[in-house]
Amino acid sequence: MPKTMIPTGYRPPLNNYDMQRAIACIKTTFQKEFSEALNLKRVSAPLFVTEESGLNDNLNGYERPVSFDIPAVGSDAQIVHSLAKWKRLALKRYHFSVGEGLYTDMNAIRRDEELDNIHSVYVDQWDWEKIITSEKRTTEYLKKVVRAIVDAICDTNDRLLTNYPQLTTNLCREVAFITTQELEDLYPELTASQRENAFVKEHKTAFIMQIGGALKSGKPHDGRAPDYDDWQLNGDIFFWNDTLNRALEISSMGIRVDAEALDKQLTISGCNERRTLTFHKMLLENQLPLTIGGGIGQSRLCMLMLGCAHIGEVQSSIWDETTINACEQAGITLL
Image (cartoon, rainbow, N blue to C red; front, side, top):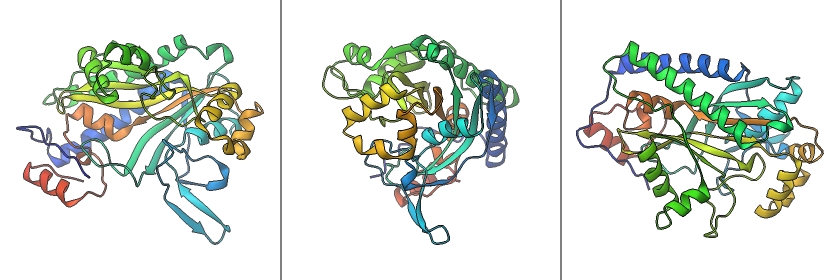
């Protein structure tokens, strides 16, 4: 059921033409800042992969991929949910070295996504992946990379405010780090999303770590596939969104599983059947590089910096009649 909320008195921050120019400014500037900060090269990426490759992201395990047959190839394909696994394989195939990485424009369809102000069935993000050594599979290195990404986001926002002084979004560069267990201990009576809102409202910019495994309560903070992030070395970057008065997740990222972590997490998740898939076999046999990587939401980043109330203001998708009518009454143009 769609859950669109229009803030009282909200008006789009820019006219349609300036909105498009501002979106282009954000995307061009951020790609430059972010790729230079992490030493990443842009590559082309697939829109779809074969099911038997095991390269598609299973997300929380219940989302259905969009599938179709390719008669000329003689197999079925799936529209990607994300490129979390493909990127790691690409680093090996393209002969990247330690300290080097790639980024790409990732476009996906998540047909089972619930629609609201920040969720759409269309997903666009910068997917990135970088080769690291075993010595850098640490919380300290993870935090260093998070700070570099946050700085690139804030530098981009500063450039945007210079070009569009009528915009008012101010972002905090100081990142507050907290684990999901510490968050549960801090707010034991709140739900996971309520904990995120409470913490990010106080700190403005936060990285919530260790997502995937069960907490003391017996429940995980949020779902995470067992075969890309190491649940002890991952997390989500959040900024406080003044327009929506809520925490806004901008990036899911982490140090990726090595063979030991994959073996453990497949067992915990009851996903041992994946061990026979090509990607998983290579990883369990230590044939893939150790990496860190993630995805950064392009539309999420644009709506945050522009102060938009609905993600449909910055991306073109399909919406239900209730959402369309609510936005039209508020003077919001859905692309």
